[in-house]
Image (cartoon, rainbow, N blue to C red; front, side):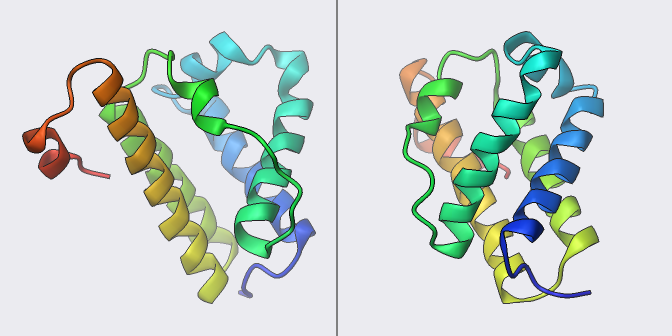
Length: 134
């Protein structure tokens, strides 16, 4: 197994990961509500740009990913599952420093998004921060 090295690897990661998302009993309904079947290609292309920017340093993605998530009916369980599936996908496909970085970044993104969502809902406090299991 090799490390993530180029945009083709990012595409394999994103395609495999979102294939799992679409089959997941917890996450699939959330995504299906917002992304119709015929709109997955544009979403995947956005995710390619996002992860190319995050992992390869390409300046392809410009946007506010949190804005797309802030009003979704999601909580800690959703983020925990999202991170779990992301880690599983990386581990199935890649091994190396950039693969490890991808997992760290995904976990950090999940934690930040969850913290912001809980804060905006008036549910975030010191006990929530300590108990967030991602």
